[in-house]
Image 1 (cartoon, rainbow, N blue to C red):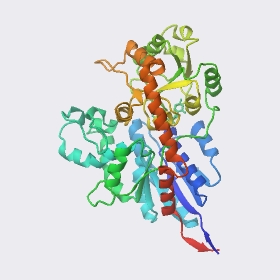
Image 2 (tube, helix red, strand yellow; image 1 turned 90 degrees about the vertical axis):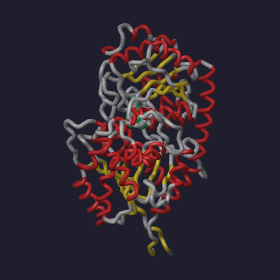
Image 3 (spheres, protein in one colour; image 1 turned 135 degrees about the vertical axis):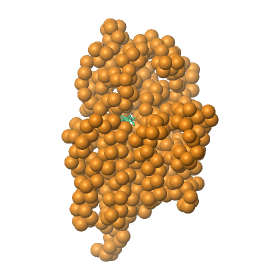
Length: 474
Ligand code: UDP
């Protein structure tokens, strides 16, 4: 009788909680749906892994192994660039690990993060099939498809372009709304991005955490390019999402306080306010946001970070205790005692979004937070800060129509009355109800994609059969 040997996949995520999560959930889905797989996570670090990262790794099923690479040094390097440089700096230790793995087992595939594409050369040395995982939207990938052409034909900064940029499968957008690395063409980040576009055709497939009903246009545009010899992205694209974190539940920082408080609030009454694992507001904007929430009269649960003039200044893992009263307006906490709950730095986002008392989500539009909002059917208020979040906000407000976006004044500050109005509109207004209904439809579509015969499940099976190892006699 013939028996299938287990297929072994090696995965290289980028450092940071929000990058590790979709990889882990992807691997869990793979081994759960296709029990013939074994996965090894090779995790880069820039210091001792955080508690949250360790908790994730310790909760992995037995068919998923993990190991941490020795820390790389990032002293003096900007956070955005750290993501790209991690891979470059840990190539020697990765080579060592892959060498040891291939001496013991047959690796069917090596899956690396979009920021870790320098690792592809090492996998190539060992003749391992290479794949990239995109934890960001397909629209960002579609933008990469036209980036070399844009780079060749545009002379100014993209934000100074008089005409909108036409991303295949998306609505035309202003250059200032392109992702962060596109905002400074002389920057190292932008150069890395151009380099990334040259690496995309070296792989056998690109896995994207999205689903067809959410990004129909971009996915179709990418699929239309498949196999085209002159395309920037000719490998097949696999939309396998939406994959969100499932592991932790209320045991995280501030967990029981948030959930107990929510238990005592009316259904759909609370706005959850959070800027992901890294997002930060300026000291002034943070105070105005506080006053806006207070003025709205609506209930809120707010994860407050220490302010910073840089929009992505929090540590990659978002943890770290401080006293929010140091940064909030005088008397705010006392005045809003019955109205809101403020927690420092971190909250159990999944549990909060799942909770029936949560009626909306003010988010920085990080892709994980966006997908989590969708899967729990919560209408959104968009507050994009960095990365591709401005593009995500446009998708949510103008394409999918499941979110409201407060307007900033000429200095970029979102004022108190504007915040109060948008919050009221979302939580108790007619517009909020319409957005909520559309978000529920999108949630149903997301669940259909993940169901037994859904599009994302079928795509994952297709990928799994590609990775499936040769049959060997018993
Ligand atoms: N998150 C959380 N609690 C917090 C803040 C964030 O659990 O207080 C999680 C959130 O659920 C999401 C991730 O951290 O899974 C943030 O990822 P996202 O892509 O939204 O933003 P990023 O952190 O990359 O900016």
